[in-house]
Image (cartoon, rainbow, N blue to C red; front, side):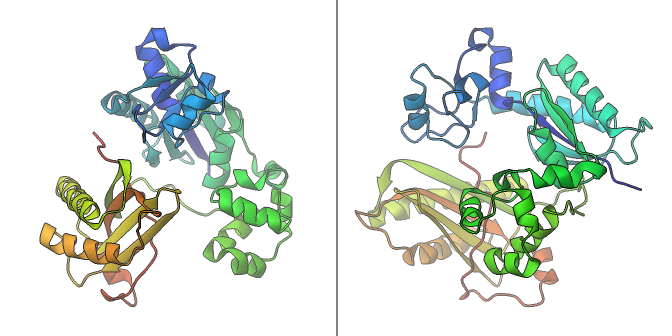
Length: 370
């Protein structure tokens, strides 16, 4: 049976909640985030996006692009409450739901609770119920795999509904700009452009061996995506793989004493999150972002679970000791994360020792998060 996958993505979610709850903000260019020298935009309203304001952008840059921009402090509890309402609606159709964040999720409706034959009808009904319940709009994409459903949900935003039928999938992929393909970020897109790859059709003309040579393991993924192949299931039960936190400083730091103090406070915040989540892991990852926005991560794996300040702080200092910091190369942000649970360790054929260094990509969470 052909799978039927829906990707539901709320439109400008945080900004939309703020404009709903505060009518005086409707129609204005707003950015949700902390208005500080190092603040970052969480979400921008569509009115602000017309000026080039976007998520993950510096608040200061956003204000230069849009002088009339209204900065709104985030209200995460309100966003979580709305997210729970949306989740309840989706569970009326299927329990195979994979949340990606507060405002988006995949649904596998191949077999659904309502016995509805067409996934597009389910998507249309979910969108309408979200609007009726929350007064917010959502966009949805429908296809036979996660890759295409996610792209489709972004195709006609806001309040869009796009279906990519299996019979037209290859035609749809061929005309895609490569930077719209899942997993292709700015640097990867630039690399592809240098190779003469600008569209899905260009990507499909590349051999798998050539793509693996250029992009490593992701080369196989790009090879499959260019052919509409994505067998990843919708995973309803997510297992936490890491716990992390990061802090952006009001001013850049470079003095060893200042870095040690900030590492100490970051360790304490990490311990608080570990206790709250109940997660246990053995790999500590240090994330450092410099004033020029260059970013590195360094990791080490211990022989035991890292549970206490005495376990973590010496390793954090050890990792930091190997990072070159100076007055001309100060630090903008520090982050720490714990990964590698006991279950992960058992699954590995060979385990790295504490002396081995690895590069990890952890979804570091800003702090505070509540």
